[in-house]
Image (cartoon, rainbow, N blue to C red):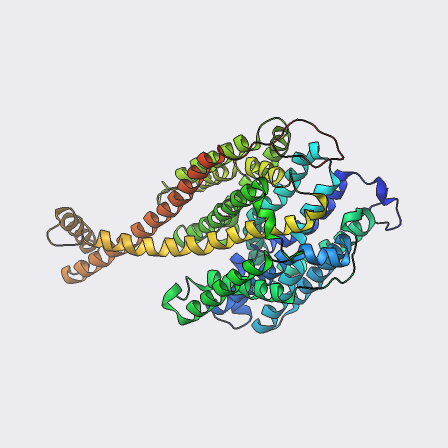
Length: 527
């Protein structure tokens, strides 16, 4: 059957082929959440903007994406899941072309907003389509495919973005989405068929109050997370204002949505112990995955002098390991309790993060690659069983709304992880500076000996004693700053290790799920 022929007998398409096609579009969108991270300085220079102003290229996308994500289930019900998915791909593709052609920073930010609005529905619709395409006993394989999309894309993003930026232009980061988006629309049109529960129901009455509260609350929260560290969190009136707006709107939204018969976001799904537990786990998976993926390139570029491409290449082998392990996790999920696989996955992450905290100025490229491989080796054992557990007791008619809520929890975890770990890093750096500076005293024999040795070495090169003493003090102070930075990175990876270790224990108390084969007509029941 020709993939490019919209008139082909679409009902004969295999679930695996459908999964690959819809994952292509979602992979493109997830990739764009991280691919611009290493290119901000180039974008700022090209568009005559400051480095701080260029961060709105990231923020605008995340804000728009976060608003649409929980609404995607309702929108899919209005226009039909397939139509909504195709519209998202088309909108994302057009917005990507416009981003690449932007001639000013405000123009780029505007088009990034459109890109985020269009891309917000791709992840949950991909997950929902795949779930309906596979019978329950093969959902481990299905979530293995979605896991590759969710894990590998943010890992490859900095690598690919760095390579394109260093060798071509940052504009090609957006232009490359255009052919992929066109192919994805054609293939989805040819292969995907909506089941009865996913067909268009027409323009239903919309809950304007719930929609407004949710959109404003999530948008304000995303701004707080993205700009909080830069503006000193609650030391800034700007951050305090948006935090209050977010808190009031989200609390009101929860109270309102729980009272609606057919809410735009079905929070009652979280009461299901399988779905609620899985959402909690996936939140912290997003927290550690995105947080660590931000820290490593930052450490390598700021302290080790790696360029964007080389820093990204440290992450790439980890993506290959994930691809290799995903099929194994997919097979195990039909044989082993999901909670045991989740415990294994969290344990592997804890070990990887714990090893990385011992990085030193002498740590080389190969060692960082090994650390990263250790960090991500557990992810296949998290994404596959967690996704399988989440949807094991969700009725098919609720799949789109459940997918949207599940994706939102993962993205929120990523936003919290990135923002909080950067704040944690800076505050611990300051704390270490204060602690270490206490040793820079005339009463500290080790410091005085080191100062004398350093000063003599400088004098041996022809400097006067006064100049050598001044230079020696400066050199040791620079060493203090460097040590503070390394210690703070170690603290950050230690935090990730502790979170993963605690969740490893918590996983053992998660509800049990069925692992044997079952009828393809039933949703996997809970017990």
